[in-house]
Length: 238
Length: 238
Image 1 (cartoon, rainbow over the protein chains, first blue to last red):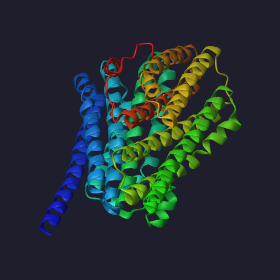
Image 2 (image 1 turned 135 degrees about the vertical axis):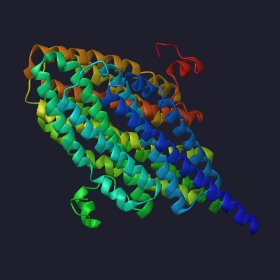
Image 3 (image 1 turned 120 degrees about the vertical axis):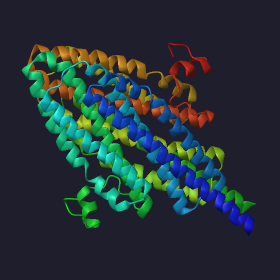
Image 4 (image 1 turned 180 degrees about the vertical axis):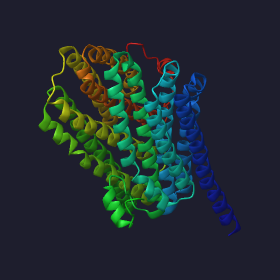
């Protein structure tokens, strides 16, 4: 009996360790995304270099957490809810790793962009988009940490707003390129940064979907946002 | 004894079913990618529409296979090598689903591009890039089907070639945009298609890495290609 409890406590501890590792990885990924955006907006080549050369740490964490998850499944043969946690973790860290990749790409482009002047309008749009995406990432990590499916559901709808922002920025970039063809190269770089931000938003949405899956046992991936809203009685403003 | 064998046979069948489902999903994803490329290159709006409206089938398969994997883990408590297969499947189908997303994006852009004239040089570059990427996808699915880690390892190095092609195409696009600013919008669309193709290549590489993981139990993600080459005695040409 005591031994059983002891084993079970150790098992709980293992699951808790995995969750903590994911949170730690999430923290590093968020820091990388923030620094990438800061380097881009402040035209800070040094910080951009730092972002571009830190990604390996995130990659290492992904492999370690994957290993730990496989070990726990093999050793503990987890049942329903624990297994759901582990499967969600395996999925979430894939998204975290890819957010790290996108931050790295923004870092690489920002090294080149640091030497160039960016128009005020573009800077404004890019700042706005970055804020939205970073908030989405932060909130989805937060929802994961607190297993808060209501917050997670709110994030799932945010992609539409991001898409609108991207379209608006793209129109501005096209105007900018048409005005002066010497702007084309840098406008393309900014465009790629915007697309990386868009994908950070997509991955954040994925993370939120896994949080709902964890909390409700319900897979809402690939479900129309209006259907989700109706089912969960969410208002449009959410 | 007989009952044990019976259960074990059923278990083998379940694992085999999962593998077959992945191959089926892979087949559909490959078809989607091929059609997306065909729609883009032949400026076929109808086919582009079809691609853009078929993605839901892939999404459905991902959710079903995920469910089946979770059920098998819970019911069969698989040991080492079986568990490795299931974890690899869970990862592979995420990449397959995202390849489907990229094919869908190419489909959406191709609807708009179908009405426009694309220069011969651009068409040539795009054809070449598409061929490389589709071959990479095909070979990685083939490596998965045959659990052929040697073929998988060859694919892992192919990203470098894709990157070179993308850079060459980007240079051509910039020239094109500079020559006539009315080309900018479509050049941007072609650029996004090229980036989607690049990501299909990235996801194919991921699938190949999981095949190596499956066959060798060795995680080669985030490992420098030269290190992998040295370890596996691969020549540069591989």
